[in-house]
Length: 622
Ligand code: ADP
Ligand code: MG
Image 1: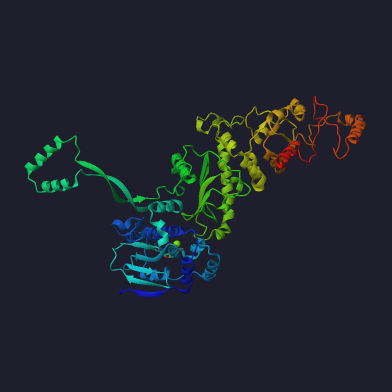
Image 2: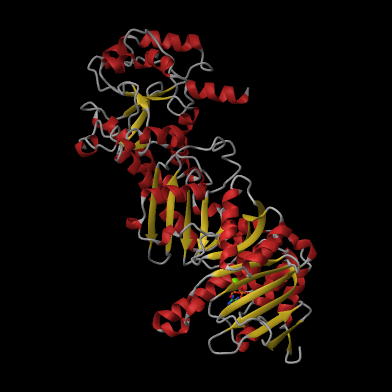
């Protein structure tokens, strides 16, 4: 082009582009996310300016803040245009030719050795990812302060800028035309682009349209030749002839003179129909909207509602918005790979741009049954996973997320009329909200094990988690009860919380360890899940009450005046017995007041494995 001015890329940019072009990096999809992110940034900028100066938006189509994607299959061109702020000639030279930020050299080095293109956007070079899929790129841009220009480059170390005298005027904004490489043909498929937008850019704050083809039925005359004749006739016909034609139509009503054929038409199809509900005021979002959002987020399109959700904004040093959901059901493999995989189900967004949904650092393992998203304004956009994982804000985010998650789970219980039975919470008990009834039992059934794992793993939140614990007991009448409820039923003078572990309720109920406790009216918790044995190694006390395994040494049921006397009078017997059983079989033989009918019982030492633990360990090694 005659008016084109040639420029050399800054050496670092050139090196970067070489790396990108020769990259064998498989995830080439990222270019679209980068371009849409740039378009969205440009739209954010003009929108911001328009806050103080409405004039900048112009009129007509220029006021439409949207992103449009178009395909030209014949010429293998993918174009993305926005009506954002646009770039002046100077902007084009500066933004798409140099890397402004310092320390870029080190970054280019690193890219060269690691080849990880996820680093691409980290230093403000996301744009160049277009060369993953294109060998020639044109950037047409119109800024309010300048004429329309075209930037173009074949990534051969140079780019050219021309005043645009041949393309259609953009009004304002930028159109990026990617001349796709042969092997990038998949990006000419509408379905691929839809998938990518859904995956990476669904919650971009501006509408994203695709110029999409659509098969429509059109009626054409049954016989094409005849019809064109007729048309010609009627066009030039007199009134009389038209009348006679109508008559003819009536006569031949049964035999249609037209047929249906498929024709391809094009129209703008909106790709990001899910609104960014996390940006809205929670008071204005309906339950239905949250449910729908959950379905799309979790790709769980059943008709079940999530058990609970929490939508909040965190303020302070680290700002973020988040929506968390408790799914109605646990996935079948939730605990299968628990100790190997550490996959959180939270989507991480940074300033509305999706970063990752495999981000382990947001939630601890035991909460990985939650679904949701976090949108942070504090985290940097476009940094690598590795960089982000080390970002100092993450710790704060995680801490707040855990707190909110546990609050949310507790609310399921607080609002459940079934849970309120033994409490004085008449409001809830009398609530007509049937939907909330039995929800906590449902939660417990699906995710109770996660809470137990949490008690084991998360010392900082152990007490909060213990509050969420449910179990059966000698007094729960086959229903679930909580530690708080247990404590409210404790006998005067009872210091410890009693529990027993075993494989099932039938066996536990027959246990001689319970005889005297039952007779005296003490409540004993049944722990029947193998994980409970581990749990109780971590849960030492609750609300200043110690836990006492009733099958272990140390059970105290209040002092008995005869204790000392008995101990004295049976001294010889216990001594003899201890000798007879030999020290490799028993540690000690003692007089006890824990039994009623059964004459004697084998008790585990305080720090030893319970009989149930022995059983579990045995079954694991077999
Ligand atoms: P980053 O977006 O991190 O700044 P990029 O390499 O993606 O880095 O883009 C470089 C710069 O090019 C942007 O900062 C912006 O100034 C400019 N730019 C890119 N795309 C557009 C666009 N669609 N509209 C306006 N400016 C753009
Ligand atoms: Mg960018």
